[in-house]
Length: 278
Ligand SMILES: O=C(O)CCC(=O)C(=O)O
Image (cartoon, rainbow, N blue to C red):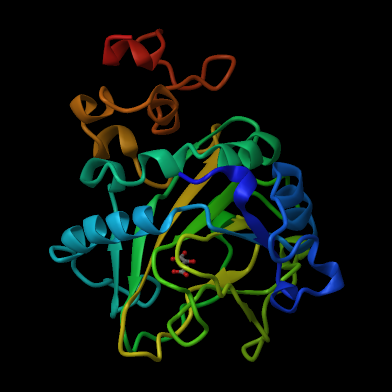
């Protein structure tokens, strides 16, 4: 991973270096810059989080997995989109990303106590239509407005462009209560270079874009949720204990081997880490 201090943060008039952009170009990124952009816009891009070498290695690894991955089963998953679930069983290439200090710094503030929820590789294929706009914490029956339940990070492994299906979103929609996007809603696009990360709140309306190019668009969503809701994917079943045993301790915790105080998540009355021999 590159140094956190060597990054840029964008928000969405940023490309032009607009006055409201917070920090554009070669500005140094801090957790608090990302937090204030997230609070204002519901999302933020940080460029250069992965080095070019890490992008190449992770793409190659996911490429191998995608060879055996079927296309989506419904409109939401996308008939021309492949999704890699059970990510932390299938690859070690995202272990460091999942516990990157910039990410955990943001999560510590927004979610406080959290876990990985639905980490997924997403390859939007040529000809895919735009995904329906949605917000990720809609899966939890908690009326809006509410404290943030979910934070998503989309890691670009290709350059994300409007043409190839970069995530589209409605800036500021994290503040909506009953409002819904009109069928012709104007969206903005998280265009970013490979190696960048798009942070977005679980309350932000967004969706995958249409891919009008001849090449797939590969990204990985590392999604986190507060630790008192059920994880979207059941990692304790998806990632075998013998795999989890070899992972960094923080990642083990994020996969579910942790206790939300005072005692949510115990196994037979004891801390789940004991199952890993800790
Ligand atoms: O692939 C993307 O850009 C976003 C996908 C998404 O929002 C989802 O599948 O929930």
